[in-house]
Amino acid sequence: MVGEQGIVRDIAVVRRFSRFYTRRIGLLHEGLLGGPLTLTEGRLVYELAQVATATAKWLSTELDLDPGYLSRVLRGLETRGLIEKRPAEDDGRQVLLSLTTTGRDAFATMDARSHAEIRLLLDGLSTDERRKLVESLSTAELLLGGETPEPPRVSYVLRPPRPGDMGWVVHRHAVLYTSEYGWDGTFEAFVAEIVSGFIRSFDPKRENCWIAERDGAVVGSVFVVRRSEDTAKLRMLYVEPAARGLGIGHRLVGEGIRFARHAGYSRLTLWTNDILTSARRIYEDHGFRLTERSPHRSFGKDLISETWELDLGPSRHPAAEVLE
Image (cartoon, rainbow, N blue to C red; front, side, top):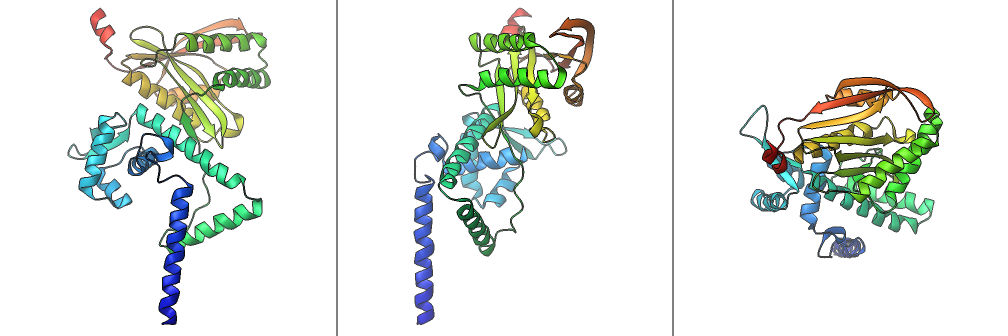
């Protein structure tokens, strides 16, 4: 009898904590984290953001979801343009799921909101209290059948720009290129003109910008801008020194390529200088080819400019088709 009373009490404690926590992190709200996605939709977007591609069977097993229910949710995400399907290269009968550019933007927004909300919870605790909370949660996860917690991985998100980001990008370009290459103030003016033009004539269907964020701080950026009906230009790629080596530069360029191809461009070009060796290696890895080199005097230095190009395939933009 005493043992039964004990388990009844323990059940009540766990249920009380469950009610408290779901209310505390907003799971009872209509949309997850104040957005348009439900809890299940948000979790699916999160999983696809982690693995890049997955099958419906894998998602069903991983999240313990009924296949029929999962199929309906995935169909809804596809209809809203958040995920896309394609046959696997090694087995055409197998369908691979992945996030679209819209889906990746939705994940970045959702991830940033989640980070901010949990940060707000933890900010109210002392360092010792946070340590106790994290240890207790890790213990709970392990006792309830979870895997042994791994050390936290250094992570980052790519998100759309927010107010103030553009000014920050200009500022950091000026600071970094002055400290690393000795370029003068004319480079800051050059970058400011690019950003100003992007803001003034922004076409969301054919242009985009990604901001890399790590622990709430901007650590990189890249822009795709329209050059002509069939050609886009990759601009303003940069990664903070403290965040280099995490693959952020490769990820930013990859997102730019995917967007340019999706927007219907047949070619993606970029302009750089030969002293930017790390960036040049990234461009080479993504298939860009060097098409032009020219010496010039800019930003207070004698430099060698380079033009690189990437063939994206036939243009699918309606305007380009009319011109043809």
